[in-house]
Image (tube, rainbow, N blue to C red; front, side, top):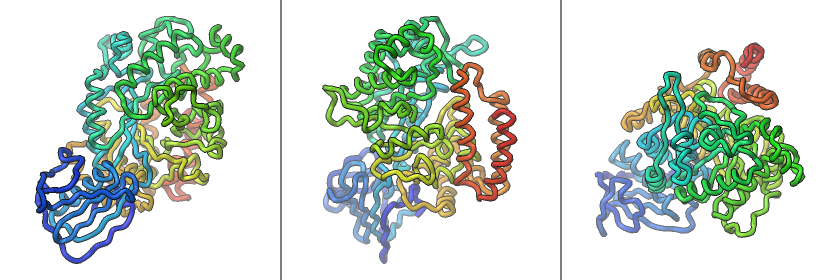
Amino acid sequence: MNLIPKINGRVRTGEGSLKVTLPLTYQGNCYHPDEFALASGGENACLTFLMDENIPAEGYKLEIDEEGIALTSADEAGQYYGLVTLMAMICENKELAVMVIEDAPRFNWRGMMLDVSRHFFPVEEVKKLLDAMAALKMNRFHWHLSDDQGFRIESKRFPKLNEIGSWWLEDDGTKYGGFYTQEEIRDVVAYAAKKQIMVIPEIDLPGHTSAIVAAYPEFSCDGEPSEVKKEGGIYPHILCGADPAAYEFLYALIDEVTDLFPGPYFHLGGDEAPKNEWKKCEKCQALIREKGLAGEEGLQAYFTEQLVNYLAKKGKTAIGWNEILKSGALGADTWEAPEGANETVGSPICQYWAEMGKPYSYPHVARGQKFIFSNNPCLYLDYPHAMVSMKACLLMDPNIDWNFEIPEDQVLGVEAPLWAERVPDAATLEKQIFPRLLAVAENGWTKERDYEEFLERVKAYESVLTEAGIAFTPWQDADIRGQEGVQKLFIQMQQMLAAFGSKPPTDNIPKEVQEEIMASAQKFIGGFFRYTFTPEEQMFIGNMMKNVMGQGL
């Protein structure tokens, strides 16, 4: 079977086969009659749906004999994934071998993040990606909806977020951007839910807020007018950390956004927030003194905690990038749910992404912190295929470091982000994502993974992508290995440097943030080829990288 992801359980084969035709007739309780080629068939149906609470969450048991098919699950998701497997098998061969499949996911968080702020993608493209995710048994769609380059949610409460904050000016004076109407967002959320995918919104706070403060400059420290940014980077003009009006604005905005997303999670970002404006702001400094906060870093922890607590009262568990752990105030053992918080709400979840987060993330493991892993050397799909390889996406084990141990119950799963600074259109987007998303899906679903065997299934899966109208990078270009892979690596790194104008855009970044980024870049360089190249090749690349780093990477 050329299934992706591979079965994470037992497959027992027998003698004989069953010929089937579509639509399959079924009996029993079917949760998804409109999502698959199914038709109600009564007692003589080919497919029987059964329920068994002893089957793991999202898991299923598929029994095929010469008389028919039985699909047993404990929940809707398990039935859905059993049907995904069954339909993939039928598409491959309408004469099914007699067998029993018992399958359940490795992790309950199998996600992808799409940044629609740096470049905007229409609803049709979002749904196309959701279709592909569902076929790969992925269940979390992280929608990065606000950043320096645009605010992408229709706000009826704060119309300037769309009139001003959703657009940037091109060099020729034309506007680029857009936003999703509230009706479109509800449609996407409902569409995803039918495919067992939860949509998690992200509004990045307090940094990466150029689009918000361009629309409402009064919520920044200096109140000065500014513009929505066109280029990628880290910009100092952020929300004020001490202005009560800024907090009230954010609470009202959260009210509006959470009404659109019924899921239990809300992503607050929290990464890359330069604080030089807070250092100069009288209000910020006064609040630091009043609350006894540990400087500007403590102020960010205070800022984030106010939003985390507000979300908790609305029944939402907050997620943040690994920087939310930096102060130590928002860990699993330090955050206390506020009075009035929904009892289902947990402590903030850390989405671990950057090597620079190791020192302050390690201690939280012993304190019970839960993590989603998006390690950038292995899962960032905006990087070239030779830098973040398909092999790395498959073989990386979610962790703060490759030889560090985290209890299984603290690892929620994996998520592959796609940041869109260098992704201007749908074709480029899809070629960046595929076929690497196949590897991410298998990593999230299947514990035992073998790259060479997986690669053979990728070759066969290209026809599935073609039929779905999805652009993709051919497997030959995504299979990075040996001296040819090393050459691809350096060519693609040179292309990235050229795109950055020979160096990353750091002109607007405070010195201390620049130093942190450079230190992270060095660790990133050392990490991305760990799963891809042999030790000898790694040593050669490492020596070459010292020269590259010396030239200003």
